[in-house]
View 1 (tube, rainbow, N blue to C red):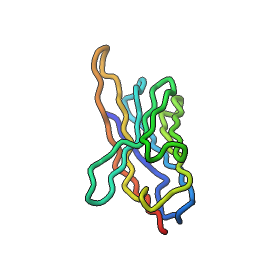
View 2: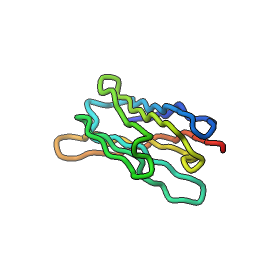
View 3: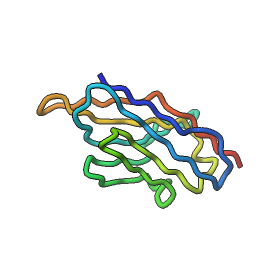
View 4: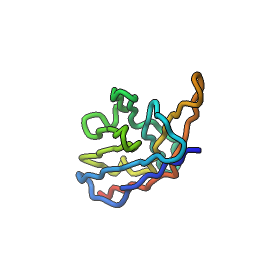
Length: 120
């Protein structure tokens, strides 16, 4: 079993920055892709950014050039540096990890979420 625990959320003024962390623990030998999602009230959960095990990244258009996803494979930890935040970034942010199971399969795990609130 694998647990993902997010931290770093909070209240920030527009234009400010936050850094989210997601620590993975449990029966982990490696982690494939990792990602950050977010869900604002009344909206569906949306993909924010992804990162492969080798460090290749992709971003939603709405956060490009403002957010940076990174990971520390030695610590099984995922990060999201968020700069120039706007009220539209207000949401619960979730991390997601794809963990290999055996040789051919994998299981996707989710964290419990961390609230990010950006005031205008």
